[in-house]
Image 1: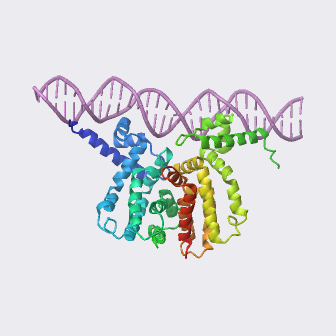
Image 2: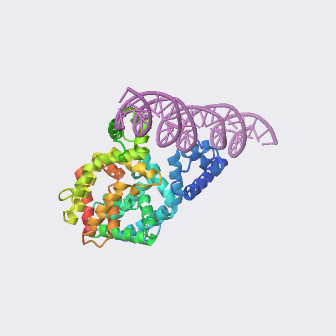
Image 3: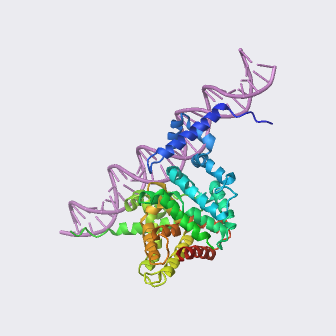
Length: 195
Length: 195
DNA sequence: TCACTATACGGACCTGCGGTCCGTTTTTCA
DNA sequence: TGAAAAACGGACCGCAGGTCCGTATAGTGA
């Protein structure tokens, strides 16, 4: 019944691939595509190994993304206030949004890749597991608030204003600093949760 | 000096290509890619003609998009109230947003293609000419409002909540009707422009 | 320690697509 | 009507995602 312990080389390779992919996505100059071959080569692994381990390109990207955001997800799911579940609703929504903005800005190339990789085929970003998860957390928290808006819709609105491409546009094309963006986002959150 | 009148066949072909592309993008089943070859064949034209006339794939998509939204842009730029420039600011923002939502919902496949085609390479949706144009109109109109929020940022927020993929998600996965979405959008607009 | 088997490996290979190129055809204009 | 300018179209190219299968190797039982 026990399906034999996972092979050591497979585990090693998976880690190597994730590390290489993370590095390439992050370092590759703005708007440069990163091919699967490049990732395989950088990881010192055959292409077959990539596809066996992650299914397809978007699977790999998702895996990298999940590795990068594991800590944040944990902090939100089980951490202390203001991110964790114990916090007062409004504070929590604001804290979560601020954290999301910071993570997206700090990993902007990866986030761009993620968001455009998922929007290509049938599965939109919005149908993605991580999106659904944050959306659910936000919606539940918003529901505990006194706002008269629909919680689910409001959560979508909040998340849509922190899409990676928009954030990127604000930091590059304009003079907006990270703090400024966080503060602008916060303004909108307060508006929407007021009343 | 006068650079010879445009050739009749070129004009005919351009129209045929636009029509074929529009039809294919609109009719192709959810999540099915439409290749340039397919468009060329459907238009009864060689592939070279496509690329000569529109530069590249995203150029073609943009052209189709612009043809489809010409009327709306005109109504906003020079039309009567509530869309046109004469209207009271808050009314105008609300009207523009409602019109945008309706157009996006009615042309959802095309809008999806447009938004993902532009987000692929360096140019994000946000750097696109049509986006910049609506954004400018909204920002200017918002500036005439009594809101304390930053007009440009607010305009970005408004536009981000009507991205095609989100709208699609709301209509398909949930039970949200077109009217419901328009009304939800309107709620947010009012919140943001209040005070 | 030594088979033996399940599992993973890796890179040659396939396919489809965006984009280019250039010999041929059509249109325009004098 | 003839010649030049402009457009045509489809063969062709390179690249990237994804598959396949013969080979290598980690685990397992004796």
